[in-house]
Image (cartoon, rainbow, N blue to C red; front, side):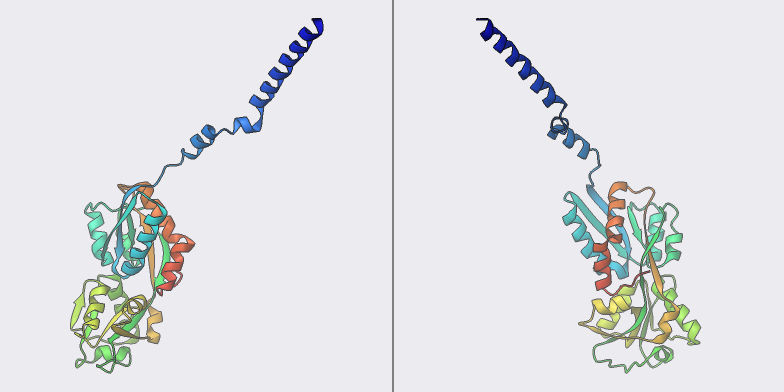
Length: 265
């Protein structure tokens, strides 16, 4: 009887000891509930992200928006594409923007409530002509020929300011037939055959290669545009804004921009 009682007591002590070890073990301390609570501390990106971007970024940013949404379910990226000067004015007047991507630092500088801008790509001017080059354009000097139909961007927008810089550096007085408010409008006139030539960006020529041809010219090196991007300090979706900027600056973002013809800043 004594032996049976002693054996039962020892078994009880051993069971309690094992239970105590289990409670203190690493496996017990890293329970699913504790892991779940730590991972949920990071805020999830969600909601609409309003991106104001230069017209020359239309194709690439549209693609980046789709890629970003796929990588971040629950988000929706909406775009306002226009001339950088017009976008800067809209933001300063209170437009609900989360992110601003400009085609030139000057227009970014004009925005009052912004975070720290980062130059993420650069772009170079190129002569765009309709397929087959019916106007027989050979170079920048043709922009001074009154017999040629020419489209330029207005000097207030980055592509126009760059063109003006190139013409002044080359001693050429351009004779434009129209001044457009953004680079896409100038490119459209070329694609429709309404003008013999326009000065647009290299990336714009590539985006419309089924309708236009590009002519490189050495003077373009005198006016290379750098593109800055920044979140807005009054962004309605601050977390989403930062996440989208980070995505643009990531290797995936750089790959899309590079494929479209943009260069490193």
